[in-house]
Figure 1 (tube, rainbow, N blue to C red):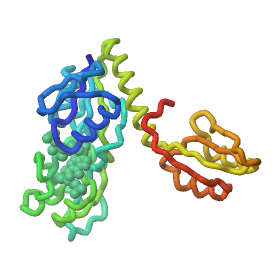
Figure 2 (figure 1 turned 90 degrees about the vertical axis):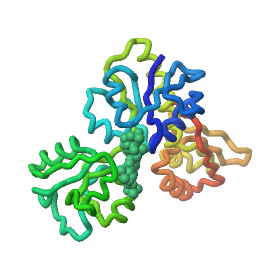
Figure 3 (figure 1 turned 180 degrees about the vertical axis):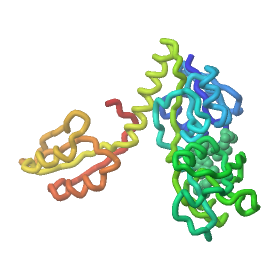
Figure 4 (figure 1 turned 180 degrees about the horizontal axis):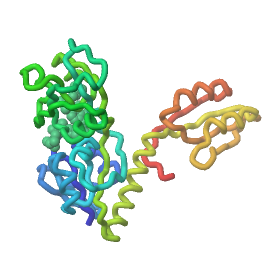
Length: 283
Ligand code: PRT
Ligand code: ZN
């Protein structure tokens, strides 16, 4: 059985559980136990504090885990990132009091910086040859300047509202982060096969989310133009309509260029465009 560690509660919990569910993996974790076994997939799930996940994977207690890249880099264990999951996005930033005239990282020379990410911060400061005093605290970093504990902070930011309400402004982004699937470097052949199966499912779920199924009608003289916009997985499907000179085209379109493609399709006389979400996509 493959052992996966996920966050027990917190910002990554819901998305981690949702991902397993979308992969067709059913768990019985109604009472928030420490671990749960999947009914229909050889997977055992451990519920842990996110900070402990890299160590558990490194020690081999868990084989894989879902954790923020920020935590993984801070803990600096010799484990691999096998999939970037696209949720839990945030950035690790240096933030300074609003009134401070911040121009460059060198303005932090000699200052006191509060953070829960002292390793990442130290590396960043060293790479810019800045000497500052790092004050490690485990939570509520944003209040440190207000209570005189530090001059500036280095903390995770998503909307920026925590910084704003604490009279701080973002000065430098040190790291862009998202949840990742991390894995031990040391797998048995059996576990490797289970991980491959899991990754196939995760990839099918994520690829489906990034694509939409599209159906449209178009005059035959525009089909070449339309195919160039909608290459699809292998190539688009074309079916003749009863109406002479017209065809129906079916393909997939990437979420990122969706509206741009739709606008061009209209220019190429496409009509009756229908767009449908895809549940799973195995390329
Ligand atoms: O109990 P446990 O130790 O497991 O959880 P935790 O409290 O340490 O972590 P948790 O649940 O807060 O966050 C888990 C992971 O979510 C982090 O390691 C990040 O990878 C990711 N993540 C994404 C965030 C945020 N966004 C985020 N905004 N983690 C924390 N924050 C905090 C930030 O520290 C600050 O206090 O939210 C505040 C800022 O948010 P904005 O929206 O006001 O900018
Ligand atoms: Zn934590």
